[in-house]
Image (cartoon, rainbow, N blue to C red; front, side):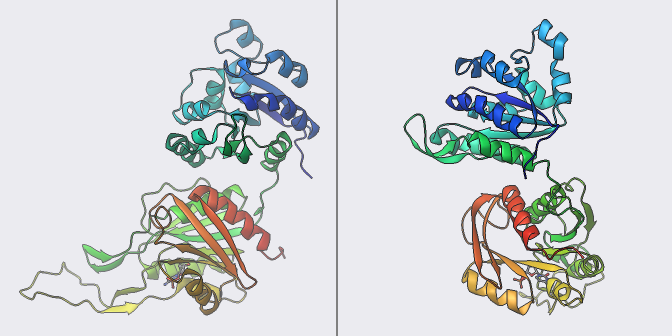
Length: 401
Ligand code: C5P
């Protein structure tokens, strides 16, 4: 049952035809128990009057940053502190751009900069504007900063176009807002995630590794934290910042990742192997830098690394164990074989041969495969995909003992 009881929602309204729906949105938020205050941009007031939103919210509508009277009543910093959630609906392309740039050139952007509350946007714009690369880059930046994005929906638009960019219906936005306050789907759970590449030393200055950026594993760790899990990220070398409130254990080689994983996995509910573990390592690590010889070729003998996730899945009792299958051909068939051979509960298959997804890219598209069937998740940012995956995995976890 959705609830916003006792929650303070600061509703930001920006300039777009969907602003007429903000009136109904106030009602829907109030239906769930929220107290609503409204900030309107100058452009929003061209579409709907402050008086309408004032009458519905039962509070004066805030419109300017530099109005001494309004600032004396409740200034921008007080508004920022008052809010449990700043919800901008509709959020125009221009507003998203200004927010992404960190501008504080009107009351709404200033409140967004000042607030410690969660920030959520319900974008609404013409489909061409939504698809525009600048808007998409701004969207990605905002998502990376943990701004929640509700929608947009796909369908017919006020301008006559058909496509993505319609604002979600007010009732959907209100429910999405309420879901931000529900206890996380992984509350009380312990999640261990491996991420990034491993490095297999050849000598003191050389190693064998791969192009994994670690982005998917880090995004999963962030999403697990957001879902309330105690999150341990066992990471090979990456350049990524530690996800907030996750514990990171740094490792370099597959053997170190194996040792850390088995130590941590014994007491966890969910183990996700997102690391790109080197399959082989040199049999010996030379104590000194190998010197060039007169030979035109050289041979390094390799030995197989232990399979970390298979070892975790062999534990008794075992955590719910989720692997990745990054493949460039026969994706689903290879993934299914790995699911069986490694005794996993679920495998996430992604095609690294598809341009724009996988390994070092910011987006990914995957297929979830378990022993009952398959579910495809289309291309989206790794952050969004991680949240969607965590929510799907939380639903599949066995009930807590
Ligand atoms: O066998 P393959 O490397 O394709 O399997 C990929 C999955 O197995 C990933 O989840 C990866 O993190 C995990 N893996 C592992 N230890 C290895 C090799 C792969 O945990 N040595």
